[in-house]
Amino acid sequence: MHVALIAAPNRFEETLGELPANISFTTRLAPSTQLALFFIRSLGDLTATLDMIFTGLPKTAHVWLIYPKRSGKYKVDFNENNVREAALKTNLVDYKVCSVDSDWSGLKFAHRKS
Image 1 (cartoon, rainbow, N blue to C red):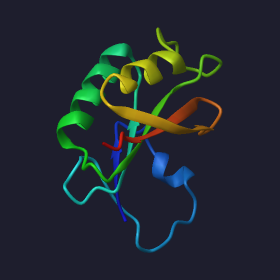
Image 2: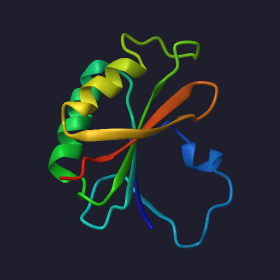
Image 3: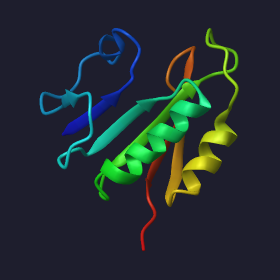
Image 4: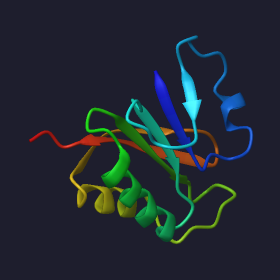
């Protein structure tokens, strides 16, 4: 499985623990990307990320938009509702939410089926 890990915090991969041998990480989208994890730190990051997803994420791939929790160490000017609202406008649909760790939360999206 090809996973794009975009703008992840330092040493993030180490926090994932043991993964299946068939997982490979890259730092950009490619036609072979099956899953992308984008770390968003500002509304500007969100806009740029959605542009990148719209132009480069394969239609069959899934994407996690990961953003700082308000209770975490990062001070942000947006929240889960902003992420969801902006992504829905680009024809993505969310279907999972998770707490990544004490500082990050995520929403999982896929392209809306036609």
